[in-house]
Image 1: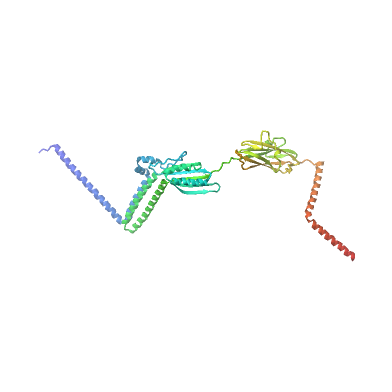
Image 2: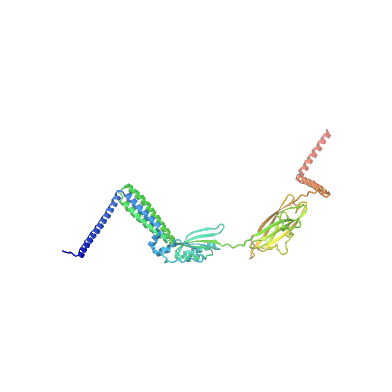
Length: 464
């Protein structure tokens, strides 16, 4: 019988299809049996050697945590989607607002920590501190800490905790307690950190539950001890993660404001004066002189005093004096276009003085061995409103050396020397008399006793 070719092909295809279905069913059955035998093998391995099975699971957990730490971005994508990952491109953005406070939005869906530092100056620090506390309490916040100092400068620092919804209102009211000196506001997005902590806590909880299950099924004493140690370590790590999350949540739920209130002090104008002095010999301009000068025994010396007001106040009641020269203010020569009684800020006044050197002396003081001449300046600063400030004092110094006279003495010099010698002898006698004068009664009594004793002795000799 002849069979058509097309029917022969169709029958062969049907047989091959049946064989393929049977082979697939056998493969599925073999796979299921292999899975069941692996599970039983794991149970047998655990019952016989629990630590070995635990070590395998521990390595898997370590790899899982490492993958989680290294792939924090993927965790964020899984929890928040592509939009969340785009928002978290800057998880910890901090910025200071120069002209206002950040607007706190309730629908951000982010975990943000708000922090602010404010510094104001107030006349009454205690009153401003009490008002600040009342402002925060009215907004539902609390005073978290306070530090006050009254030593060199009075100030108080207060730390407040307040809901983020009231953060802007609190900043606006606290900055108006006095003159605003400094304000810094920061907003830190910690959403990514919160997501990471939640993921690590979930993984740690799974690990702890798995170890507890292994521990409940363990029979070997050594394996039980090792599992208990590891379980304790895992539980400690879990509590630490939970503590970090709680702390972070507290900072997110309550914004922190640190307020410093300083005592406002009235600005005092700057006061300053500069004094310079020079020496010049002969007819030279003393203001073109030097700080040190050598002069002839019989000559004249010029002194120049330059006073410059380099402060912000007017200088009044100006006086110049010197112990070496002993001059008065009337002896000074001041140019007609300058005033020594009142010096405005930025102005300069020059005064000059001429002194004679006679016989190596100037103003009665010997200068042949060198003389240090000091000049003192005192002035009274006066502010624009007429307030008198603390007096200013400045000093300047010059050195004068007078050469000794080497010429031979003449008749006048000899006469002057003799007279000076007589004066010196007379002064010595007067000095001795002055020293003995307090003992004069004792001396008289002693002389009287001596005279009486001598007279009596002569009388006895005459009677004999």
